[in-house]
Image (cartoon, rainbow, N blue to C red):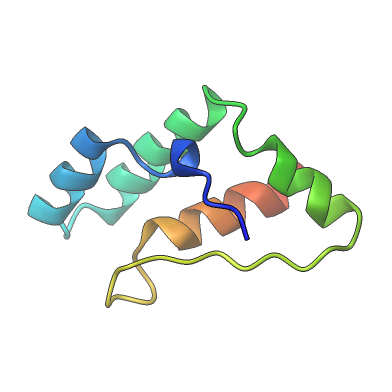
Amino acid sequence: MQWLKEIAPDNTLRQWFHQHLEQWELFESRYRQQLAENDAWRPLVALLRQGEPLTLLYGSKDTQHNHGIVLRDFLLAQI
């Protein structure tokens, strides 16, 4: 198991989202931008390309609006 803290939203974005839950699309856009500017996610894409299982964890109670959903979609778009 690995924890790649660098691919999580930065503290500023995470805190902003918790105060603006109704602005999901803006959070998603900003987080995708952070991911695009950071190569830390590349090892995860390599695993996916090899057919390895990948489990993403998140701490939100909302299963439809959390950074794990954005990260999953971002990673799948890279393969």
